[in-house]
Length: 201
Length: 201
DNA sequence: CTTCTAATTAGATATTTGTTAAATTACATA
DNA sequence: TATGTAATTTAACAAATATCTAATTAGAAG
Image 1: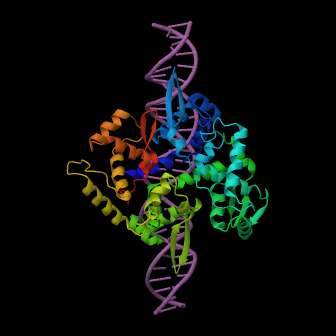
Image 2 (image 1 turned 60 degrees about the horizontal axis):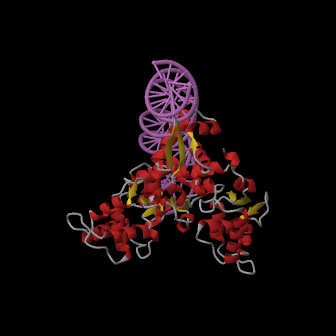
Image 3 (image 1 turned 45 degrees about the vertical axis):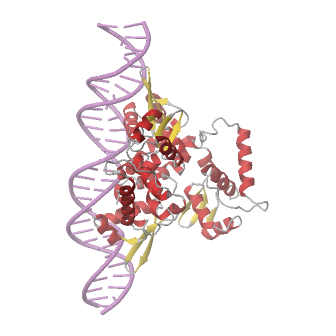
């Protein structure tokens, strides 16, 4: 039954240790011992989690001498569209731009902004492609104050200065975790949180 | 911490009952009692799961008299790009059949399969109409193994068991992204696999 | 054959989680 | 106010899960 596949997929990602494993693997393959050390768990625990990730087809394994190297399954990479995959791949860069120089990236960013914003600074529409959408969202969010709390009405007004469909964009802010919402109060997710996630490991 | 949100999100979707609730809600809002009845669980169980779904911002609630109506958080509607959301929204999204019941769709599907496959399970020919063609392609692809890599010759043989024009059908697999091809190696796109929701009800 | 390293298994334990029955709360209306 | 319906809470329990330690297996290299 297909339901099991879906549930299994989410179960595989429903554990912090496993997410951390995936984050580590996004940087490149790694064997069990180094994963265990990096995450401060025993090798047995890694074996346990590796089995779950394997069942969900999220990782591949390769034997070299008596070490087993784990790596991310390619299709996980290609289908990365949610916050999770975004989190995991933010640093590694979504495969295509792995070898992009920092200048190339800046140029891409500029091109996207030029494309989706009018000369007056209005947002034409949200890009459908995740990578571009994130560039746009980051641009908007960069104009908010760090540490300040915004009421819902305030946030709506802010967004409306760029685009009339504030509800959608507000939702995007939340889902992509550029902002947190708590009891109708919105607050920027400290930049370190999404730009520097290394501390997760 | 960001990690908790991600894990929480996946935990929310890591239970079959909750997925079924979301599927039911994709048809429209529903109150707790009818959900309980439809899923053959007690109202207490629904309350329990609703809390989890609410924590993950997947549903909204509305009170009318003394009944509480649950509905999907609209975020999902606009971002149904991943396997799960795609699964849940497939019928709502596919234009034209938006108001088709899950039963109607199952019936359509059966009719199409009956029409385009012989009694021996051979494919007569590919439907010209897109919607029907996709039904046929999904049916074929559902017989492939998830996570397995197929050589070109293997894929051809597989298709030939259904129809001699393997080249066309192979191309359709790729075009409609049921499979990926890389260096002559074909592999099922897990997303499409998971998107087969028919048997879930 | 012995030794070393890496990974897995097996068993144990504590925690979390899904479910239910029973009691309770919240609204609506007669 | 009393009654009925829907939802929640509480307490209990079984099942699943994450982790560890200790023992075992797999492979490489002396």
